[in-house]
Amino acid sequence: MRKILLIIFLVQLTIFPQSTSFDFHSPQKIKLFADYLFCEKDYLRAIEEYEMIRNQFVIDTIEFKVMLGYSNLGLSKNSNKIFSDFNIESKLYPDAYLVSMKNELLIDSKPLHYSEFSSFTSSQFESYVRLLNISALYGDEQSITKNNFLTLYSKEDQNTLSKLYDYKFDPPYKSPAWAGIFSAIIPGSGKMYVGEWGDGITGFLLTGLFAFLAYDNFKADHDTRAWIFTGIGAFFYAGNIYGSISAAQIFNAKINFEFSNGLKLFLENKNYFIPDYDFCK
Amino acid sequence: MRSKHHIFFITLLLTTSAFCQIENLKWQKADLSYEKPNKFRERTYSFKSDNAGELLKKSFVNTYWFFISDVDGDNCAFRPSCSSFFIDATEETNIFQATLMFSDRLVRDTNPIKINNYPRDKSNHYYDPANNYTLNSEEINYLPPTFIVDDE
Image 1 (tube, each protein chain N blue to C red):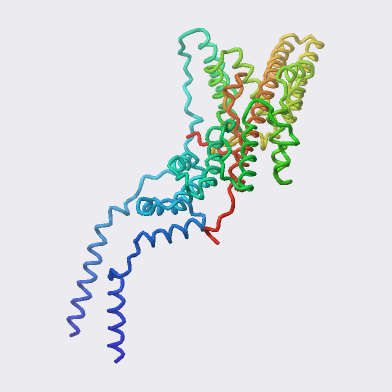
Image 2: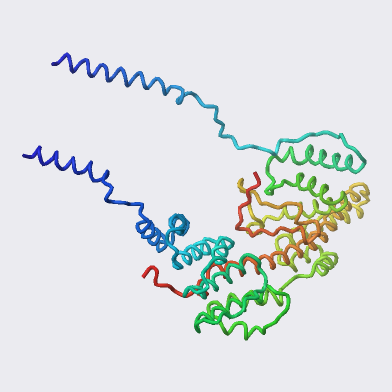
């Protein structure tokens, strides 16, 4: 009896996987799996699954999820490509519009010229204005005062954006000319002026050391040695002036980098431009 | 019955050992080297040059290599190393400006507190290319200290 049961059990085990009644690759099953992956934030694999069924289901939710997935992966161009074919009649179009605005900012880093969409809800309109505001930071003209700029954002974001606003319109640049002049007067002081204290002190000590050795040897009538130390001292003195100028330029490049990178990170990390959806609830 | 079992096991063992032999190529000794590639020693101490400026540069670099760099060993904290920085600087600017850049690099190299100022390359040296110091702000490629540079 036992043997018979075991055989029946084994036979069933081998037959079921072969059965065609379970179609694991039906479009519905693929969609379910893709939805699961999307909610798990595994966007790359979710998009792969959605792409397999996009021709079979013309559903704006799938289009939107693919667009959002690409955007969250940082593939802004791919995301906007989906938007170019997005159905304008869809309920999700205003949200897709906001996502495309964010993508555009990340692609071009230029002020946006998106007009207001007629069917925006109040929260969508708020996001639209916030995005337009942020895009103003990419322009050259100070079109909005700092207080007006910051009022639209939460307190936490205001700290980040206030710094970015200052970096853009009142950057704390250091003057390369002043750095050079400072180092010409006191070796190393130009480097200290741009915040390179270690390099500044080292430059001062090296130049000072060789200047002293030159002076001391001249005083002791060791002219040859004195001239060698004078040469080395002059080498470090001139190099320090040059280095202070280039350090100021690098400092300014750092400010520019911190502005552009900070703004990019802010845009990538802040998802409140796009409202919450009940896809995964 | 017993002999049948024996034949079966012998055949099994023979096949196992015979198939294992096929894999012998897989287990041959491999020519592996775990040494880190050292580009530091790839130097040509030649004075061959096309013009006076080139000869001056070669003389300076060879002197630096012979009297300082070779004696000190591969201890420059930076990549490119100070002498390579000077060569790069002469290629990007002129001998006079390159000398000033080299002098500034020596000061920065002497500074013992340079942690967190430069990005690093994969061999954990500070990455500090000459193009950042040519005084042409367009050429500056600022990288944050947290950045790891892949300069292979």
